[in-house]
Length: 531
Image 1 (cartoon, rainbow, N blue to C red):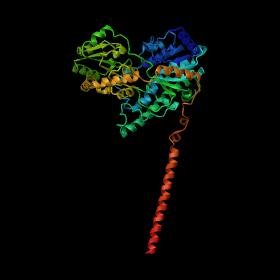
Image 2 (cartoon, rainbow, N blue to C red):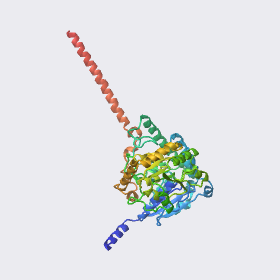
Image 3 (cartoon, helix red, strand yellow):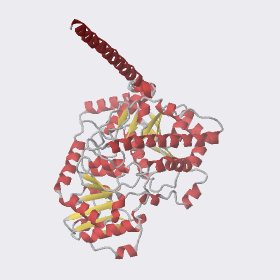
């Protein structure tokens, strides 16, 4: 590199003043924390001063090494009851194996918000009452707070500190986009497990309206209950979360337009899905030696992992029986199953083509050409990983956004969505996995999607950084937010104008018809007189 080039780079770097950014990174869900931690790394790599504030709602494990940039600062905040959290199971996720909340959205609408609000209540109250914490954070002169909107404490903390706040959604969508002017996705995104247009039936469209309104009610209840808990702890009312949340020039979402459904949106909803992936080259992580031997056993190898939240060993017995039947039906395929405990009884029921592992090097295995198929729960992290490695996938969603992710990936032709309750049907599971591993069309479609993602015309990391720097410089910029969104439903959809037009047309038609009848009767009378 020439001396002139070095001077030019130094000049550019020195001209870009480093921002001071606080990332409110609540410890409640590993995939959420992993995404926000990666965001911290990306922003810190730009030379900005980033602090990850990490309040523990649960005793979340394996989070220490997620932030890799040494220039980033981590502040862990433990509630006074943290020892109790360490003793107890944080939350019984095993019930989601049997849960039918996806087919009964009303059940989830009223259960989920209360569960979240109760889990966050203790830590959130202590954060908002901790004056020493507030003094410490104020002393750092942060210019902006990035927060996960599942926990509105980050929003209210930013308001307390008088710092602009930007929501960062670790999911593809959560319907807060409408606060930023984005129109409804009704008709563009299918309800959970439903068909996409043009195959969608009238009943499915009615169901879509019902589910959308259930989802919106769930969101309002979740944020409203958290706000009420904080108000009770503080002893006074807080500003409306909707007003505070919308008081920013943009929001970030973990969505990628080349993977996601085509949806109407506005420029202030910034889609940065892919910042956790390497767009330039394949994952170069080496496969451990023990997996080298496993991958060489047979022509086809399948990886099965249901993530770190809903675990395989908690699977209902009838589901396990269906999976084991499938193993026996496909003796020429090797299976690597992430199974989190030692279980001699289960091991004795397995054929020799199955390998149980408590932990698997998932990114490395997905990047290996010898892996034929990934069977996954469809968490967004795993969905991104399999899409960016060009592997076919069998998506078996368990709860939350996983049904959405399953249909989202399956529409590209390299994956199939599979009902979790069909795991009990070993024959159906066998036929599905055999189809995915033997039909080369799935592999070809998966590789085509990989090529699209590799060649997408913008870099999500650069999009994140440039839009964040712009928002810090112009925190009150609102030109991307359509003013029509300030209107009510009637004005928004022009229902009053359409009603006036329809009434006018009907009135005109009525007058015209009366005139026509009068004219015809007049002509008939004149004709009769002449005769």
